[in-house]
Amino acid sequence: MKRWFQSALAAIALALALLVIASVLTAGPQAGASENETEPETRELVVGTKEAPPFAIKDDQGHWSGISIDLWRHVADRLKLPYRFVDAVSVNSLLENLQAGDFDVAVAAITVTPARQQSVDFTTPYFNTGTGVAVQTERITSWGPVIRSIVSLSFLRAAMALLGLAFVAGALIWFFEHGANESFGGGTARGISSGVWWSTNTMTQRASGGAVPATLPGRIVAIVWMVVSVIAIAVFTAGITSALTTKRLHGAVNSLADLSAVRVGVIRGTSTEDALSRMHIKYRTVVSPKDGLEALQNGTIDALAYDRPILAWMIRQDGSASVELTDVVFEPQSYAIALRNDSSQRKQINVALLEVQESDWWKDVLFRYLGQP
Image (cartoon, rainbow, N blue to C red):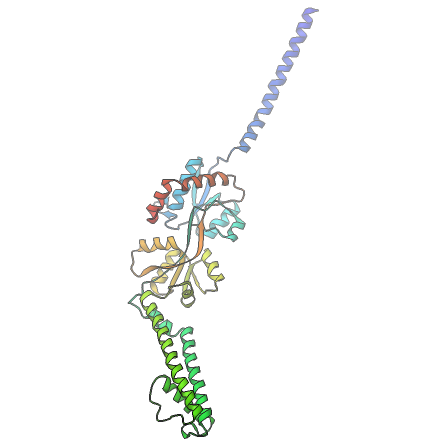
């Protein structure tokens, strides 16, 4: 009986051991799968980029460098994220591939806009800038801006205003003089034309051909007109001289308002298109920044609006003295890394970006590419 009881206990113990082993084997893979689901993705990330010096530069061997590229490499190394670069033709193409799931990350000179934020996600901005304007170097070498100023709508309005004043003064002179002064008689058309001729001669300080107001009201009008015409001519001359001198010495674009009077070029598919449309400034598009710079040098456009640091880099690399960057800056911009909406790395990338931006390494990168800390 005792041996039978011991055998039963041994059988029960063996059965329990088998159950424990089976449960461990069954639960092990599930626990491992659960752990893998909570761990960050370790698969190779597809990073889309496009040429946008000095933020993304591709050399002849196909190697990438630049502010944004170096920044991504630094962040990816800190987070131990495997990745590979894939080229794209434009920022729009980058974002479309990102939205479609073909890219995991997009790194270039990508501006954060409300429209883009609706389709993809962005990290915290790592570079703040604005839209700049490049123009031909026209100081002292070209009368083009002067000629365009003379035939501009503002010039014509000022000239028409002077002619309008001369007509009013001549009509008043005729009204008071035609019945008592033969110089302003001979019918309505002839009399008014004589009065306008007199007021124009008086305004330009030319001899009036002997026609002199004879009545008291006519002389009062004449005195008032002489004073007003001197002031009007002085103001008109000063304004035109100032405008022409500014155009002659400083070029065609000295303020944002000047863009409305010149031929502006923008890169197709950039946020600058939206900015100029909102400001009701007409523009023509070019395919790439290089094409825009060539169009500016060839005189096809008068100004090229694009991201200011990229324009500065292009002008410096081109080495040509025919193009310069103006002081005009508009539409503040923020560059960020674009991510898929379902990306699980956004938070850790943001933390790494904030840490990197406070480091001396980041200051060295900006100084190396832009010459500024």
